[in-house]
Each structure stands twice: as C-alpha cells, then as structure tokens.
Amino acid sequence: MLIERLETVTPAGATRAVLLDAVGTVLELRRPVADYYAEAAQAAGIEVTPTAIRARFPAAFTRYFAAWQNQLPEDWAQLPDQWLTERDTVEAWLVDPNHRAAFRRQFQLPADEHREQQNWSDLVTEILGDAASPTPPTVPALATAFDRLWELFARPDTWTVIAAATPLIERLRQQGIAVYVASNFDQRLLQVVAGHRAALPVDGVFTSAAVGYRKPDPRFYDTLLQQLGLSPEQVCMIGDRWWEDYAAPRACGLVAYWYHPPKK
Image (cartoon, rainbow, N blue to C red; front, side):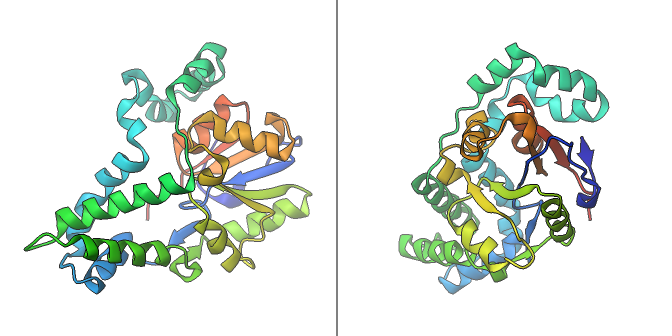
C-alpha cells in the first residue's frame, strides 16, 4: 500500500511487529547533506562549494551504495513506476514463487561495519576530490574531512525526527505492537536513535551492517524474522524506498507500506 502520511498506517490484526526505515521515514538531516560536506571539507583545508557537491552526490551515492539499481533487468527497472499505475499486476509479480526466487538471485548484498565505513570513505574521497578546486586535495586532507563527517553523522543533533513518526510509534506500542528501526546503516544509528529516545521510543534498532545484508537483499528480512521469532505475515515494514522497503519485504511475505510523502 502507498501512504503519504505516517499517521494513516493501520496494521493488519495479525501484526506483531512493525519495522520502520530510518532516513526519510523517521529521521532526516537538519540541513542539506551538501552543506555538511562543504563545511567538513573547508575545515580540512579543501576548497569546495555545496553546489559542486550537490552535483556529484547522487551518482556517487548510487555507485557505492546502490549500484544494483544500474544492474536491474530492463523490465524490473520499470516496476516502481508500473506499481503506481498497475499495482495489482506488480503485486502478482512480487508474490509469484518464480519471481521471488529470481529476486533472491538478483540481490546479493552482503554488509558489515568495515564495508560500510569503506564505502563512505570512498564516496567522500570521490566527491571532495572531484569537486575541489583549483587543486586536488591531499590524502591527509581527505582523511580529515572523512573523519569529521563520520563523527558528525553519528551525532543525534545532526538529525531531526520526522514529526509524524512519534505519534505513530506511540500508537503502535499502545496496541501491543513492537516497533523497530530497520535501516541500511551502521552502528552509528544506535547512537542517533538513543539520542532521540523521547521522540523515537522504539523497541530496538536493526542495521544492515549488524544483520549482514543490505536491503533489498531478502536475507535482510529473513534474518530479522529469525531474530524476532515471527512469521512474515506478523511483521509490517514501512519505508520510503520502493525496492528496499516495499518490494523486498513483499517478496519475503511481509506486509509493507511504501511511504511516499508529497514533495516539499
């Protein structure tokens, strides 16, 4: 199901646990990501503008964290848009046993803390190295900028909780439903969520680095089901990414809501 507002979520009667994606669903940066990168660069002696960073960030992020998007079969790549106009057709695709098996073969995305940190380091090096002017930054300067950014995004005050998340979590827990954050992230997310405990009173946090797989690898959800001791129909996923937070859990048999708020 597509939802534009978190407060409209009404889990099915069998639901025992709800998984919430982190960034874009319950958390967002206080300021544009390019601003943080530019400030960290300048503090490290790298001359770069937020505009230059914005121009390079999307492609670089995809390269290091979502390269699978460029490796999808042509007919698969059309599924998110097709879902908006032919939902029943795509739903039938997602629950077909042969397609589910193909889904599992397509997405093989192992994860761990080292991979996560290395990917972020490579991304920072590429963005700041390519965007800097007039001369390329030194290796030590890039390392300094990365260290600043790594620590910055671990700080709770870098993030703000999306307003509708708190009443949703409180309502679900009052109904006896356990609520967890389930995200492609690393151990820093635990510190961020803990720093917002009053606004995010969740029962726990699952990160891809700890689980061992990145969404949309179905093994991410398989592992969570095993750890929760619940069957797929007892678990609901809510997130803003169609492949990671909707298609993957649906292919694993979970209930799922695609959070697609109107653009600001």
